[in-house]
Length: 177
Image (cartoon, rainbow, N blue to C red):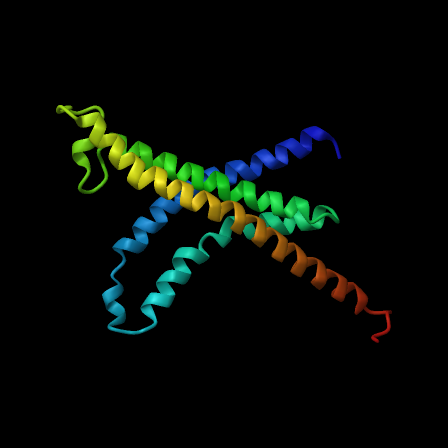
C-alpha cells in the first residue's frame, strides 16, 4: 500500500469525525426538543434517551474500525482510527459551539454576540463563558474521545477478528473440533 492512500484514509476518518461533530450538535438539539412526555412517566425514558444520545456516537466509529480491522493484522490501526474519528468529532463540535456563542445564537447568551454592541467588560464575560462552557467541556470530552475511541477500536477489532477466525475455522470442508 502506498503512503498517499494511507494518508488519504486517515484524512477521510478525520473529515468524517469533523462532519459528525457538527451533525451531533443538531442531533442533540433534536433530542432536546423531542416531546419525551408522550412516553408518560415511563422509567424507560431515561435509558432510551441515554442510549440515543451516547449510542449515536457509535455511528461513525463502528464502520471505520471494522474497515481498519479488515485491512491488517495490527490492532494499532483500528485503535488510531477510533481516536482520530472521535477526537476530530469533539474538536468540530466545540468549534461549532464557539461559532454559535460568537454569533449570539445560543439561548440565554445572545448578549455575547461579538458582532453586536459590546459593553464594558464584554470580552471578560465572553472569555469567562468560553472557558467555563466550551473549553472545560472540550478538555473533558477530548479525554473521553481519545480513551474511548481507542478502546472501541481495540474491542471492535478483537471481536471482528475473533468472529472472522471462528467463521473461517467452521467453514464448509473443515472439521469442527
